Amino acid sequence: MTKTIQIALDGPAAAGKSTIAKIVAEKLGYVYIDTGAMYRAITLKALDAGIDLASSEETGRLLMDTKIDLQPSPAGQLVFLDGKNVTEDIRSEAVTKSVSQIASHESVRKQMVELQQQLASGRGVVMDGRDIGTHVLPDAELKVFMSATVAERARRRYEENNKRGFKTPLEDLQKEIAARDKMDSEREVSPLRQAEDALYLDTTNLTIEQAATDILKLAEERLN
Ligand code: C5P
Image 1 (tube, rainbow, N blue to C red):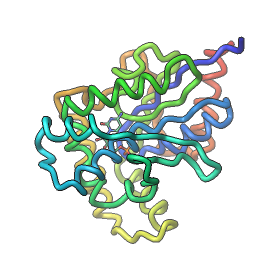
Image 2 (image 1 turned 180 degrees about the vertical axis):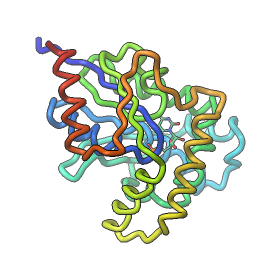
Image 3 (image 1 turned 120 degrees about the vertical axis):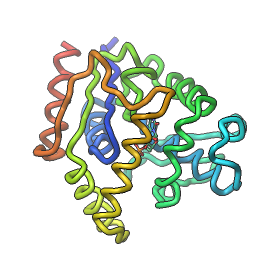
């Protein structure tokens, strides 16, 4: 049987993790799992349901009654929430503003981690998020913690948004990214951290292709 490995890509918001993870997964023929999309999906549902986002109990209960599916497609990963395609809806400003609050609840994280571990079980995967190397896949053969300056991350998000027709000012994006980093790093349950055995990759001055090539090289080393 061909050997496969698990690759954990963690880092702060808009560090290019998902774009790079997708390329790496495609090149290796692995499954790509965007865990941020899963937290975004439950956030969308909580906002629509009008429940108290500050309540760990209410959000945890809502998730128990929720089905989140990730499906690959030629256009990228599709996200389904209770059977409905929400791939675009989970990228809204409202979801982006509230997702870190929902993701701070232990009741939510416990269920998400279980689901993510099931999705990764026994196969080659590239999983990106905030706690993959530290909690979800602690035995992953390759762990990379990717970052870039806030200014560079905001600039990338701005360009990405522009292509999709969103016009959020650069300054607002910088503030939103910095606020999300702060919440994700300071929460009590599995905060954003570099795992001890993760390699640090600063992508500020790297193109997407360079970063993906670096990670693929590291993956090949683990595979051989
Ligand atoms: O990756 P993305 O920016 O879409 O993630 C959205 C949010 O989901 C993060 O800001 C964080 O609050 C949460 N998240 C998390 N743990 C993960 C992935 C995402 O807490 N593994």
